[in-house]
Amino acid sequence: MSTIKNSVRLIGNLGANPTIFNTEKGTKIARVAIATSDYYYNEKKEKVTDTQWHNLVFFGKSAELAEKLLVKGKEIAIEGKLINKVYEKDGVKKYSTEINVNEFNLFSKELPA
Image 1 (cartoon, one colour):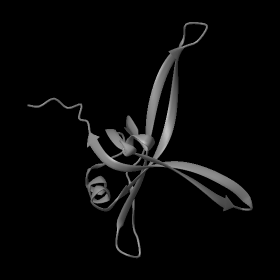
Image 2: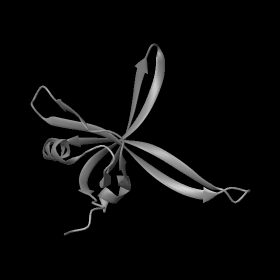
Image 3: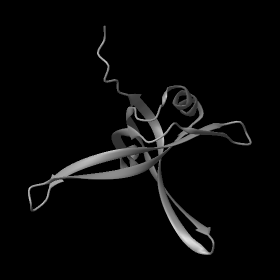
Image 4: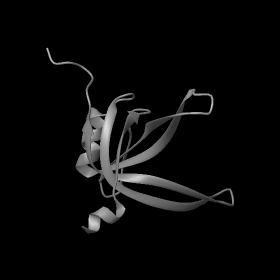
């Protein structure tokens, strides 16, 4: 039950191919962003799309799989935990949120033959 305290699940589309890094200890890291979209209707009954971008980070074996399988535009489901970071750039304090991915699944819109 402790994992439910910081858990996020999203389904979205990849905005780019992953960027791959290796730590000094040799652990592979993959970074990529996904877009999720919600829809609502405004006062004029016009459909409005609200798209949010989420930064994902994969480690180790997950990063190796991400490097091989993830391609810009593909739909993906992820499960992970939120990580908030604070850093300083040009004397200004900046904040960022990313998702450390524990599991992921790719969706295919192609029908089997």
